[in-house]
Length: 392
Ligand code: PLP
Image 1 (tube, rainbow, N blue to C red):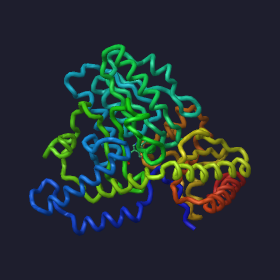
Image 2: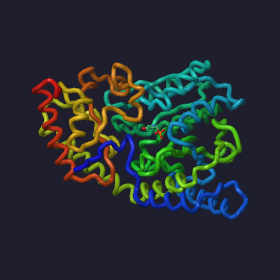
Image 3: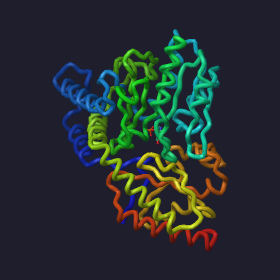
Image 4: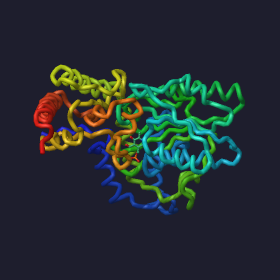
């Protein structure tokens, strides 16, 4: 049995996406900028993909900039807003639990002379909105807060932050921008740019977290928001992001986003059911564990510390049983310090809690039967580790 529970790291492509991309790679290979028929065909597919992607955000296609990944979208924002000449503001507000795709360019901006404020979090990875209000000043350029934390699944109060920002701008005549890294939120919670996210200016997304292809991402840029391009060249993406478009991947992203947001409530409810089943089973059957994900966290993530074990060893033991999980976040494992996950550290976890942490992350195809199997194998792996001190 193979039980894939590392969906926050990446997902298996929908078969429909793979089929569409293969068909396009074979038959729709023109350059969308070419003036002949093959070029026009490619342009049509590109438009179609962008339209589907835009509708996942209830946005207009012109507001969607295609990038090469979530990381590029985040980098474009963090470095791009500062370059806009009219903006002399110097403060960037973010959190200490962002993905390195935000933390690293923020640190780079700091080296370039900007002031970066990193909001701390509590034991459930929540920021304090009062603290945000305190640090929000006239010379703030950007607020960047992720929509869903990738390691523990906490849903951040983006709507409330948007309201705070809008009110501040109105009162002070400022133009503070709000960015959210929604890489882990797309397909799990609503990202409606006309409703809850109406005061959000910039949103990062990535296809491979929603059963789309790897190496393609998007940045929603609200109409009227000025941003300097990250890549200069032929002026594709209305000048925001030059480079010949990866048409099959964009079409694949469009289809994946259409599928992932269709019946989103039912899909999320299924993932939550699977997650809750595993959480309950582990709490009942495995002693001395700590659930690090909040009860009201995103449907797709469950982070658990198995005290007296090493997450990495448990991970490899489970792998031998066909179960794939992660310690912290796979996509940033190169970024971990010797103290382990920066997110669990920021949440104030003790070293032994961090050392024994495993992230289980779900997709819409996981089943209760898979959770029974997983529970059984986790119980054995943890029990054996505790008995022997290690498997080695
Ligand atoms: N932001 C978050 C919250 C993520 O979880 C990830 C990847 O795991 C990224 C950004 C980076 O996305 P990509 O892998 O498309 O560069």
